[in-house]
Length: 208
Image 1: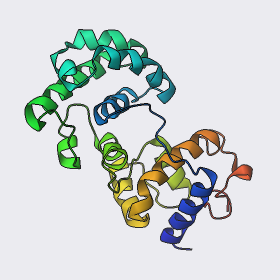
Image 2: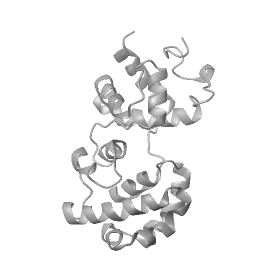
Image 3: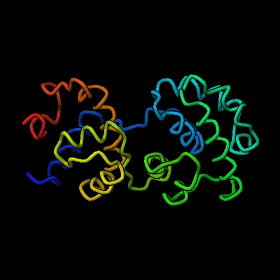
Image 4: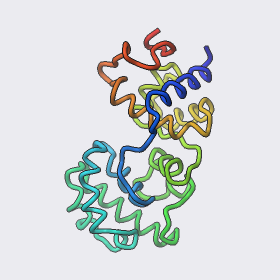
């Protein structure tokens, strides 16, 4: 079986297992998703979802964030970890969005990755979930599961992103990444994968 065939089987199996391919971060607009994703670095989505309601109530739009100091933002996000760095990035990216992009979250990878603290993972999430473009969000779950499936033997997120772009149907790639996160949390765990109950066990290299 080729890697492309394995990828297609994985798309089909995960779609059946997790029909609702949604981001677990809660947001109402592109800026909120951008900030929530930045907060989620080395922090659980559940923790971020507890923090953001008060944060977004205090700073309801990009202009409010752009006028905020790092210390003001930090007060709302201390429980997310690395809060000093994150508050600095959030204040700075809001200022850049206002000054360079007319107050609108950019709609392309190049501009998104110019924003302070925003890498390709977050940029791809914005492109896929907000702007409905083909996107590959490579997080720790994606790296682990696609390696176990035999799609690559790498750890470099950027290289894996481009491999998966070639293997996955473009219209399925964003939802595939959401589903693989759900599967990584529920079944294909880092320390003890539950292979016997895995919907991909028949073609997963780790299980064969």
